[in-house]
Every structure is written in C-alpha cells, then in structure tokens.
Image (cartoon, rainbow, N blue to C red):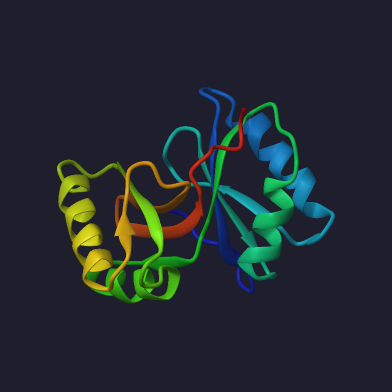
Length: 163
C-alpha cells in the first residue's frame, strides 16, 4: 500500500461508490483542502478504497469530512492506528474503547484470505476482557481493515456517510 508523503500522516480511510474512485478522490480532497491545503488522497491498491493523508490530527479532519455531503463516497473511517502486524492490536483497541462501552466490531480483509474471522475473534476477546460490551446492535463501530500488509484501526459511528 502506498504511504503518505513526508510530513503527512494517514488520517482517513475512504470507501467509494463502485467504480467512482477518481470522483470520490476529488470530492474528499476538495472538502479537506479548506482545512489542510497539504492534504493528499492516495490510492491503496484496492478498488474504491482511498487513504487520506494530512498534517492535522485525525479528529478535526474526520469531523470536517463527516460533516459534508458526497455523491461518490460510501464511508469514511478515521485512522486511529496503523499496524504492520496484529501484535499491537490490543494496545490500539485499549486506547479506543473503555470498560463498559458498547461497540460493534467490523473487520474487512482486502488482499488477505481467511484472516478476518481470526482478527474479529481476537478483537472481541480483547475488548470483552477489558470490560467492553461487544454488541452487533451498537451504534459505534471499531473498524479493523486489513490491507494486505497493513492494518488500519478506527472507531466511528456505524452508520455510513452515504445515505
């Protein structure tokens, strides 16, 4: 997966309507340019999945992106953690979810077969062990996206951006 330019960090993972990546990229870039003129939207190597890189912190970028209306964006996930392997997953989950908090766990594996079930089970086990409540009806999701050799973790409302 291509990374961010020097000085920029991954802040959002954007999924686009099927076959609309170029329009989606332009939409997201235009919205975020207002708060960060250095914003960079890059292809991930997977169809209709983009990575947004910024010099700003994830939260203001996510809030600005989420507040806009789009024609070609399906969903926007904040990037709260980027891992090269599953070893650090518990640490990232521990920073995102507190004891007693109700969350839904969503795992999406791109370019990796058979791993999503294992990752989901590990995440649920870790969260429940810390006292979190994993509930498929929760309104807040922990998103774990496996992009070949990169794992992106973010916490956001389960409801997608595209309505």
